[in-house]
Image 1 (cartoon, rainbow, N blue to C red):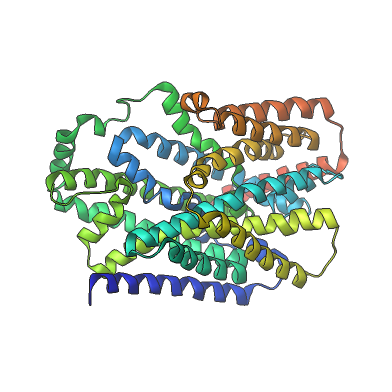
Image 2: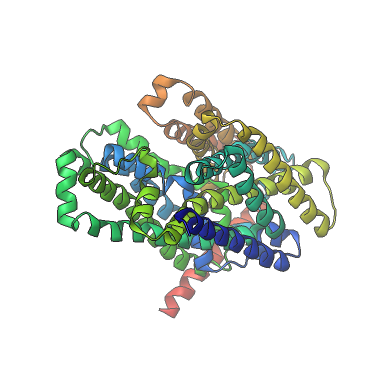
Length: 501
């Protein structure tokens, strides 16, 4: 068999496995909470790896290695910022959000949590936050579909549209039928594939380049600055890169995992697994780029045409075509895991936060699940329309959307969990000011070159939320009761853990 046949077999096996998991999750989905939040039944390992896989996308296997290959370790500041941000997110947001969303009307989405937490009778906050999620994620999903189309085009020579349809069809199928459980279980498997691939490629690759010392020496021959974290860096550049970590507090497709874990107690174990996975995966991505620099320097006949394909090229050089196909499946896994996570959050925003709030519907759970599945299909088709004409501006929106979500939702989520005096008016004003700041700053070239738009957006959103909340605060006994109950349960959890030790 030719190498392409082996590779195709590996991809087909991977795709089939995703559909089987989707069918399994479908059999376990009986009501809306199951479909949107997995019945709050996720274990720590599934929670951790599904959050990581949903987060990283193709950036982990293509974008980051490509940036390191071109510019060296100075590009690793984004990875450092993301790791710190993810750790703080697990530490400060996960336990409280898991408890608070259950205590406050068993909220199953971020907008419904904010609506219930702040007792916004007007429903404006819920509708506004649901609309932000719907708009941004529709474009976000389309960017992933574009990446899927490009993947099949560059890896197998398929027509771009054929690749787009294949990726979209499989993701839509298991997301539509299996809902949140399918997304979480497939993300778990995809996270494992990504992790193993990122460990194996540099570990085996370094032997091809003569070992660690020989590899480092070859990289220094290319450019000694490639191994420096600070060479060529500016203070503003480091702040902008590290500030990516701020975005975690406001990413709906990531923090929704915190709401789905079985118990607060398990968030600690999930944090350790998640951060361990993240550190090793990021280190593997960086090491892959460094090994790639050494390999292609030592083998000038093996030219690398696209820096972002360094992981794929090394995988094909090092391993048997079938194993190389698994490496390609890892890239596909990174793309598909993010698309599916964004689809389920978009679906929940459309049904739970917009449909229910606007029409005040009181339909059965079976009908809501049907509408949830229908919305996955509709949003997917709209995203496919945007992705049909390959458009780089859609891909550029990924970093823009990350900043938008981080600045609009991040400060509001943090304050809602730690400050009892935040108000619905303050949250709405903060969300809007954060989103608007990102939109304006992100579209003025001189500003984007000076500082990543999440920094001013996050700071302004935080300040506006605090100022408006202080001016509109009125004591609400129900809010006070829920806040106190959450704090008491958190304290009980801490004491329980201490006794077990």
